[in-house]
Length: 446
Image (cartoon, rainbow, N blue to C red; front, side, top):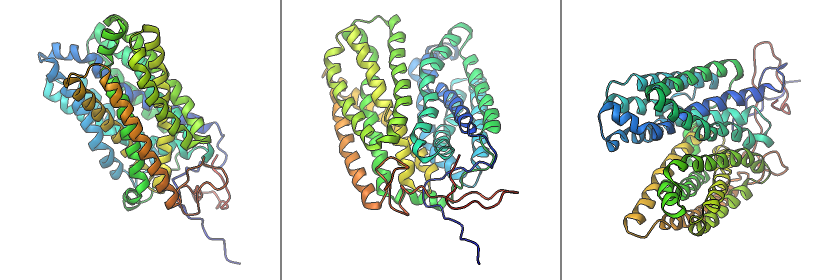
């Protein structure tokens, strides 16, 4: 009797640890990835607090120093597709370590930069890692757990990014003010080393079969992928249209002093952490409901903020809830894009990071435009309401496209979650390892 055929992977990648590994290894893997997310997130945003120190030390103006922030944003957009494509045939653990090595070298170059031009170049090089790391981390995170916990696992990794805004960035600012701006760069480089060691120790050696570069690029022929990237672009531009100008809103409308700003923004950061942690499990149960609820709530809260921004307690409460509902959509949206991409999950996940950064720039530009037109500090809030409404329209089109292509709009692991062969199908092959017999097609990831 001939041996049964090897099952073929038709859905997003899943990782098969060696037999005998304890289940808690998946938890350790997520911790290692979350540490990396914390390090990368701190590196991205800490420059905003260090900018005056950099300008004074290098003898340049604040606008000139802000080129370091622009360079990072450009590096994210450029690096996400390029580095992801370059690493398609590299095992995930190796790719993550290489990315962290570039990250460490980039931050060390920032710490040792002799002038502004060198610092801008070093920031660009450091940012190249950003999108590729978060894209691959999301793919690995959802691969080490059962499909029904995919969004939750992504949420745990993204929580590291949210915590960076609450803990990492303020700590870097305080350290820079006390001992100079170069030391925080060196500390972040050390966090990169810690991440690389943790990845080597805690990410399983056997990797995700990420497919060829052709398979990755083929994911962009799926209409739902582009529409979901559009959801990220429109949904988060709604937030950044307001958040980019939150300082004048809070000082001029709510009456906060500049010294109180850090506390208020920390409240928003805590809300983003809470939202990221809650959004993952909720998205595993109701993936479409979380996105619809998140964008609808964002629109309503931004409209309410036109009133509550005149009261200190109400403004703080509104910002906390905005952090919860906006970032609560992130894990489910990232997981949904990977599922829509099918076998090419890494590159579409990295593209989502590029879309997030483009949303930052687009939202800030739209908010700046209405302020320049003299429409007042509430005008960016109405821009955000409109962007959220547009995001709901794009989401409806994405759901329709998913249904046409057979991709799942239900929670992974539930009956009927996608037709066979569609992007929602979670059937995957079991990795063949030295000394391990072939598993049956029904084996599941532990």
